[in-house]
Amino acid sequence: EATMPAEGGKTDMERIGLFSEMEYITVGDKYVSRFDRPFNEAASKNKQMLPGGSKEMSDLQAGYFDPHFVRIFEGEGYVNMNQVRRQHMMQEAKKNLGKAFLPSSGDKKPYANITIGKQFSHSADFYDAPKENYKKENEEHHRLLKGTPFKLNLYPREYFDPNPYFTENPLPPIKKIEKKEPTGQHFKPSSPGKKAGGMKAGTFEPYPAHSADPYVVKLENQIVGKAVKIFHPPGGPKSRPVESIMTLNVR
Image (tube, rainbow, N blue to C red; front, side, top):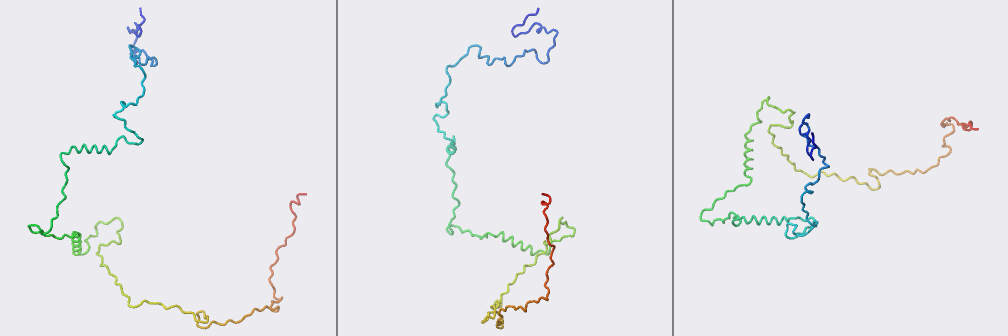
C-alpha cells in the first residue's frame, strides 16, 4: 500500500523505481519557481538584533583623515608641489655624509720669467694651418697629373645621355679682360639749330610773303548752264490706297 509522501519527500513508487527509467535531463529535483523563493530567509528566523534610531549626517572632524580642517577652494590643488620638492630635497640632504664637493678654480697662469727653471718656448700654431696644408698638397697633386684618366671604349656608360657640358679635360686658364682706359674726351653732339629771327620757321630763306586773296562772291554767269544734264534717280513704285480687311469682313 502506497503512502502519501511527507512534506518535501518522495512517494513509494518513486523510491522503488519500478517500471521507470532514469531521466536524461534532471535527477528528479522538483522545479521551484524563482518568484516563490523567500528573500533573505535568515532574517525571518531565529532572533534578530535591531539597532535603535536612524543614522544622521555629521560634519565632525572625526570623519576626516586630517587632524584639522583644510581649506578647499575651487580649482585649488590638494598638494603644493613646491613644498613637496623642498621636503624631498631636505630628506635627500640628510643622506650626505659630508659637505658638498666644490671643484677647484682651475689651473693658475703663472707670470713669465719668475721661475727658477728656464721658461718654456712657445711655438706658434696658426688657426687655419690644416686648411692651408691641404690646399698646398692638393695643388701639388694636380700639378703632377698629366691629362685625363685613361679609359677604354668599353667602360660602362650611364643609361641616359651624358651631360654635353661635362668634360674631363682640364679647363684653360681664365682670361682676364683688360680694361682699356679712355684716351680722349667723350663725344658730345652740338646743340640743335636755333631759329633765326624774322620767323623763318627754321628755313634758310625768309618765310614766303602771304598774297592777299579776298573773298569774292560768284556771279550768276559762272553757274553751270541748263545744257548740262543733272542726274536724277528714277522714281520707285508709287503707293496706292488699300482698303482694310476688317472693313471688308465686318459690316
